[in-house]
Length: 97
Image (cartoon, rainbow, N blue to C red; front, top):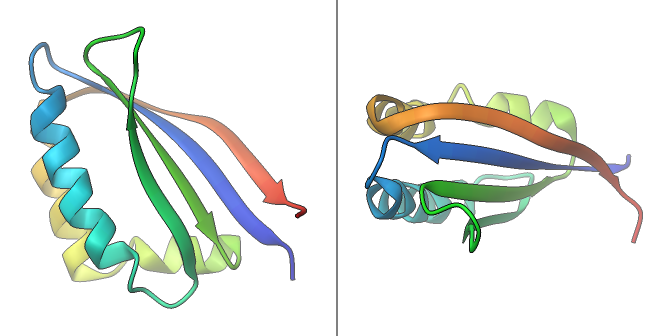
C-alpha cells in the first residue's frame, strides 16, 4: 500500500494565526498517536501573516479519512472553525521514498 500525504493551507481571520497554531499543535499530539499517522506538521507562512500550512503523512487515504471521525479530532476542528477564513487542500501526494 502506498503512503498518502497532503498539504493543507489554512487562512485565519486577521490576527488569529497564533491561536490556530496553538490549536493545531495540540491536535498534532493527538493525531500523532493515531494508528496510521506517520507525520503531522504545522508550519506558518513567512509570506502571508495569517496563513498556516499543515503537512500530513498517513499509511493510506482511508486511515486519514477515518481519523476525521474520531471525537477528539472533530473537537479540534470545531475549535478552529470560527477563526478560519479559508481552508484549501494545496496538494494530495503519494509518498514514494
